[in-house]
Image (tube, rainbow, N blue to C red; front, side, top):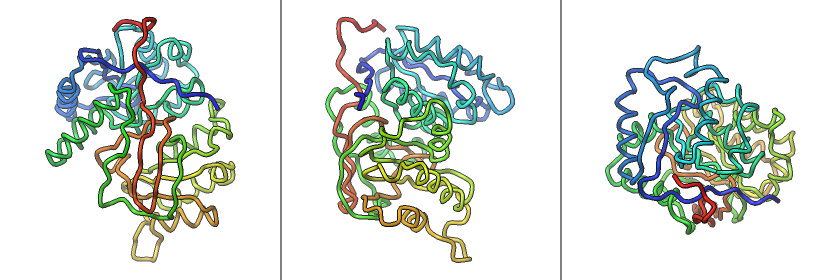
Length: 335
């Protein structure tokens, strides 16, 4: 099994670029983006916006055409001063430029790419192609500048410290802070590499030439969440993973808090998300932890793709056993 490709740890004063990797920036969200920049600066980083991140710039539902976004993204990947890239928002564009990404630039100088939603497609594909650890974290505008600001002060401070540690520390974070929402849906304990994202993006990624080979799911802890659509869609996506053989290979599952999914807990005796998951898993005896805070429902706990974790569903714990970044070396580009 290939080893994860870890970026070097960020240092104080390193440059983090906020980029339009998918959706556009609407004028109403400019204050949220400004607040996100404040959060990143408080963590000790310099912050810059990418040129495509302009209020009102758009092409259809995207910030720009796939070629334009890929061109700018590749420039950021090749720029030694840029030490991390955080997506301003999600959207519906990443699928259009998967074949245009400079993967050799990633291998030569791996950098943290932060985000979720549509960005989880990038995490999966780049992990498949290069082993790059994917930083499945909050987006800049709706996350750091939005959900975080609506959270209690103590929670904001906890998240800020957690993200800073994720990006700068070469020691494992260990146990993630649990919340009362976490539920044991099937008891058990396991260790494995985290793989996942939005469930519809997992399915889409596996339909491309950049899919993760099935053996990369052997012993993995699959994490996923969904936003929008209908409960039957989630059931169908899980059935795709079953038919693909993925559910027969994983060692555990972590499910995020659902967001705006029709047909859950409805008056016509529709199933709960737990019932849907257990229905598709059948007699596969793997631990399942549900309602964990990552995804569209609110502030995200970091879920680094490719990092080994320990999952104990009965005890409702999830621990990061490895760091997401590595120490600097003399051959690293100077930012």
